[in-house]
Image (tube, rainbow, N blue to C red; front, side, top):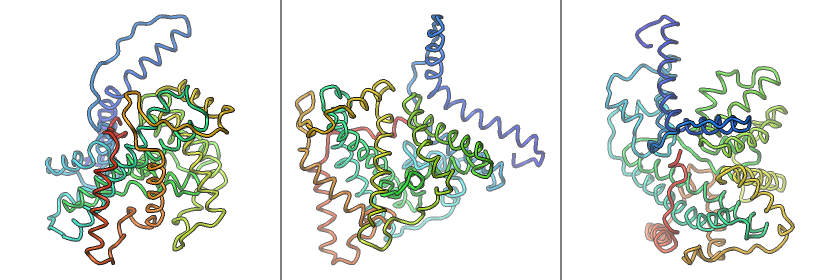
Length: 423
């Protein structure tokens, strides 16, 4: 593409490259889904097909490094960057180890120049990176993994629990997936900073959002902006008529859902978020909340607080489809959640099926409250504890670090795989 100015040739190479990238992703991740769905459709018509599915292991991080490669090719096509002639530098861009398995999804325009330039040891950057790694570890092994114990039990055996317990399970999953994924992102950004590399920010305290549009500006930022720049804007964005706006919004969220996994649950999750987002877009209110909530204040106003609670509630409801193994399981969970037992006291389980004791619910509740407070007071920073204690005496500051390390060792939950490893 770079060696020719002929538009048709450039487009040919672009289509070829995009097809190869998406072809690998489609075969490994989506082939079985399409074959199974097609077979199910034929069975409804009375046919009994016998299609062969693939029994292969999904390559680690395929969704993430495929999008790295796509952004590189698309940026060359748009003349935003020149092609990288050094294969090692290009390989580092695509496969930089901190972000390989769960992002963030980097751009060549942002990462490649950093890879190519000479880097020097920077003590302050290293300290900041270690602090971000520490916070990411706390999010993952203390908050996410302990929430996962309860979430797994409630979702996997939902029939024996009350509606109020189902609500608790859905809320805990919201914290699990946030702390799991943002914890990984903090670790990745911190490790990269140790090596003199600044990765794209992936989370900006999304549960403090006042509407769904703000939530999506703060959740998985690298993926959201990728879809915006490489799909939504090329489709026409919000410049066309009302039907074009509706079409583009549904395309973006459907693709986002499908990107997460080959399951109808993810597609319904995407449709739900499109339905949430659409009224804001049609009423031109999707960019009303660009600044941080209660900026410069200790507490939000009543209207801001209620908007935040409503947005969080809508998000938690959509997460049910994201967590459920099938659409049927999701609707079963929701029907049980909105049963008469919704207004009873929740019965939080205390042991797993293997009689392994969990962190007591009271301690987990206190940890969540403390976590929310730390996130709230650090919401104007890049991560929650970025500036916490920087002006304290060194002895007190280090006591805080060791206390956090101690909590990680003492209160860590059972080992849980990062949720986004499967994507």
